[in-house]
Length: 265
Image 1 (cartoon, rainbow, N blue to C red):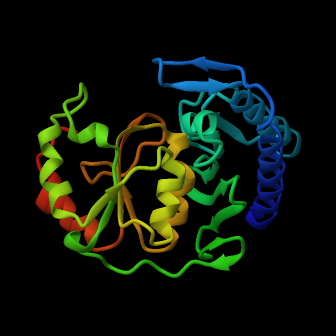
Image 2 (image 1 turned 30 degrees about the vertical axis):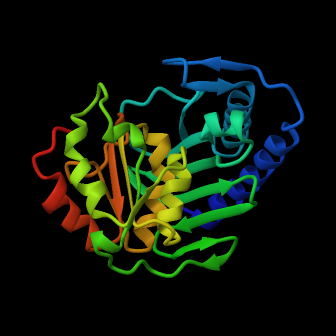
Image 3 (image 1 turned 180 degrees about the vertical axis):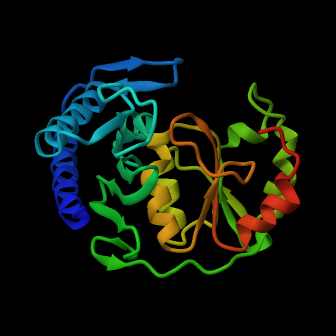
């Protein structure tokens, strides 16, 4: 399989899609809600996903696609080559801020990550990796991640999970937050994962993400020695939604052992 060729095509399409999004900023968006009033989708989310599907199917008709907006294939397995596409990760930020969102594409073969592309559209920063060849920002190599300890760490974590909520006992994460140097929340899984890859945060947690939220970031992070699992320390299941725990080496193991063990995730 010529992964360099696939990577070249994917990068070209990502840049074209990014330009489409930037030119949409002055237009009026058609905004809808999905699962709840805060789960937004715009006409641009749908158009960008369809843009990718059209190009992928023209060049690689045998590849399968799992996309957030549902225009891809209905997958029962990860056999073959699968593209995981989130056309705009951080739609609420896109709508409210016109920044802090990204295009995310992970390409896998038989369930193994081969290519990760995350494009910060507004800042024109493309985070990219081919498995076994390192990770980069706009072609510049990202250094391998160093080990970290909790009291010197910044955690990327939505404040929702440390106040009373319907999904988990919020008391489970309070000791972890207290132990850390600080917390941040950016509202986009794709960017939080590459901020971890770039060393801007030290760990990232989420209680529920979809495969297209994490597929690309996992490839990039693992190239740098980062560890990506669910909150139980298990390998991610890219056919279903799950929790996510990504961290620098050493820190992942210590948080899992000292703070997450026995959690109802």
